[in-house]
Length: 266
Ligand code: BGC
Image 1 (tube, protein in one colour):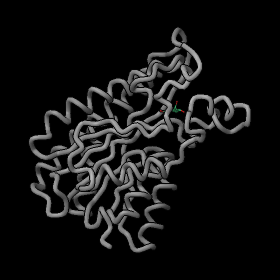
Image 2: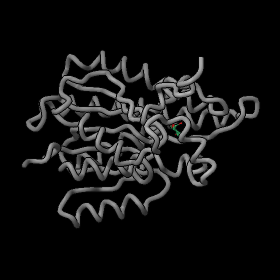
Image 3: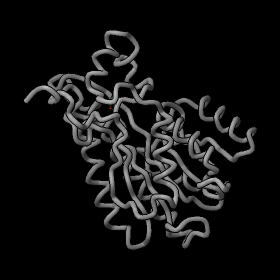
């Protein structure tokens, strides 16, 4: 059977760790050639690109800071030079810099907003321009597909992380407004909103039994998520299987947004 993303090229920002890394593997497994963007740690992305190539796929790792327009432009230029065009862009790069509100420095605010929100703005803008440049696709019904990596915190407020929650709340309206604007060109823009996925970003929340027990109280489905859960969602949203899905946030969170605190309460 033909793989669902065969002959397509996917660019994933923040692909050297965590959810981005898992999404890159899933898209490559589904047949896409992948561009693995990383910022500070070259090794994991380059190693993954190597492994994908050895397994018969196509992959390249490229350094770029997504908050810098010149570096984003170069990321897309180098990708285009290598693969000719891009069909799928996953705007995933993101980080946390938590602190109580009154202690939060302007640097911590700006770093999170510039990576999580401005970074997606720059990545998606470059994506839209690239889809238009390449013109109609021969491998997909859409001109191009964009997946914004959001979070359950696009709707769940999060004390001690006003910068992170503001960035993800921003992604919600950013994604929908962009989706509305470019849908007539058959560019599909959607988000994935992961819940608690076992990665280094939230290690403190799952690496001791006490922390894990506390975290599980927030997850009706009773388990912490794995990057593969997000990878599968990304493959579907990037494929023609979801061709009529436009401007939607797909929550992949084990029910975290069902407000389980209300189960026997309220
Ligand atoms: C955050 C994680 C957190 C999860 C659920 C994610 O967006 O990056 O640190 O565990 O949301 O709260």
